[in-house]
Amino acid sequence: QVQLVESGGGLVQAGGSLRLSCAASGSVFGINVMGWYRQAPGKQRELVATITTSSSTAYAESVKGRFTISRDNAKNTVILQMNSLKQEDTAVYYCNLNQDRWGTRYNYWGQGTQVTVSS
Image (cartoon, rainbow, N blue to C red):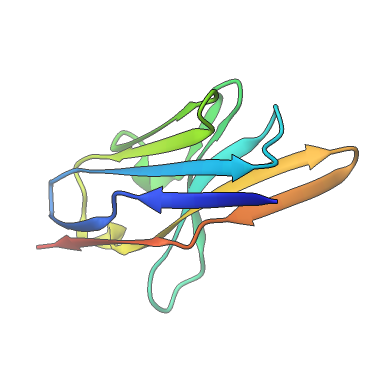
């Protein structure tokens, strides 16, 4: 079992920055993908950014150039640095860990942390 603990959410003015952290504990395999997703009211949960154990990254087009995802493999921690925040970034942000082992996929989610961007 894997537990994901998030921190860093809050309220920030448009144009400001926030840093989200997510620490994974438990049965974390050596090769995995960690990422951040977000869900705004009335909308589907969407991908924000992902990062592999080898530090390959992928970003939603809407956050490219503004958000940076990174990870510390030794600590099983993923960071999302969010700069130049916009009101449309307001959402609940969820940490995710996805790992495959012997043909079985394991997917875990954090509890979510609220990010609110004010005008």
